[in-house]
Image 1 (cartoon, rainbow, N blue to C red):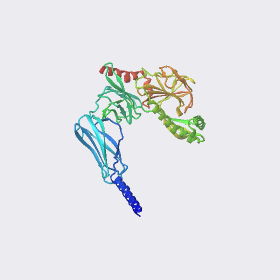
Image 2: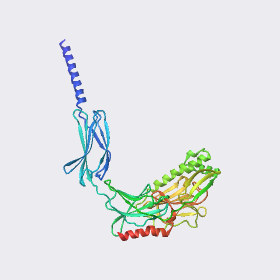
Image 3: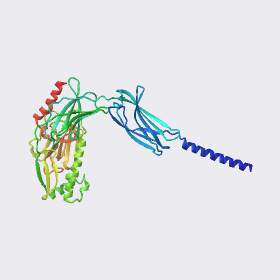
Image 4: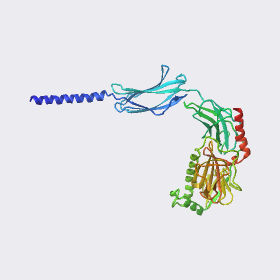
Length: 446
């Protein structure tokens, strides 16, 4: 009986110890919260939004405080109290404004502290060394005259007072990056080619914009003069069912969804869906550009070529007399003899060769600093992707591939992936006034 009593006592004691340990573990847990600062940064400018994730898997998050320390002084940025237990993850975004906090430019420490709900109030602090820089960028416009045409190109040159993480020109709703150049005197400036909207007006906004590593952003307006309110042509084109069905069968190897589609549906898929997909491909391809200028002087034209369609033609398509869709012609069609040799209209790097939907066999050349040229409907291609080609070098032969009814060359010019009127680039007078003289003036000024 004595041994049995000892056994019972031992069991009770063990139970009490285990239960007590469980209670202690539950009520006096010692695990610290976890903090993750989502973005990596080492500078804070005039204003910066910082996202923070705090988690505590046991008792939940109780309090979060965010602060900056500079020269032994602490500046409170934000604090968050979570009075109820059970919030095991808390995501917050804080706005840090050193100017509002009356902080000086220079070194500082960004700090996040998190506390949990346990009776021990476990806490953890994460610190990050940063530099406060609230000095705005100062941009100076170097080109004074900006005469533009609807759908044309405008060159803007400017300087930035300190290194910019990103700079360029916003025109309408599109951003065009600037590319650094060095003047004869060794000074750095930026050149930016801008695609002028086809519907440009006095209400169109054109601004230089720049941001530094600290996130400071500045804007400087660019004034411009619209030389002429160009009216683009309206054109109605008839297409036959035989043409649509023939082209649909040609496209099947790349677009199998066309198989078995009725003629009108096939037309819509080609003219709308495939066209949009092709233009997205062109846009992304043209962003792969050299920061250096690769072209010189006026772009040449196709030898013995006759213009068949112009840039900006607004086309309405009729299928057997019924309107089935429309498009905007974003290039110039030039016809010569069948399978005529196609020369590179200026020097550059081949950044695309191959089939491209409605454009058929296509070559795209990068001329640097966002400028590109496109040659489409080709019967054959002699250039290779990555090849450096010279002005006048034969790169292909004309043809009728893609959405083409006969042998010709479709030629397009693009600025940062946006189609612009090629006529300007063929015009020696335009090149002289709008590019060369501007650059000469910039060089003389700097």
